Amino acid sequence: LNVTGPPSPIPVAVGEDVVLPCHFSPEQSARDVEVTWFREHFSPFVHRYKGGQDQYGEQMLQYQGRTEL
Image (cartoon, rainbow, N blue to C red; front, side):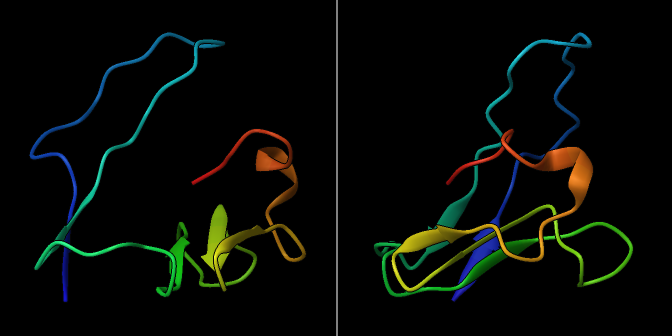
């Protein structure tokens, strides 16, 4: 399974919403996949999707209430 994101940065103004696209290859549903978006360290994370739902338990404080998959 390969996950690819956008080929270049996505500009957005402070305070605006943004969609960060990604695609699976080969194409498949994300329902049975764990997807974790993190910065420098794996935990706490920016966003985690696991077991068919968003996981917020160990999410970085500055992203709480701001992310979804």
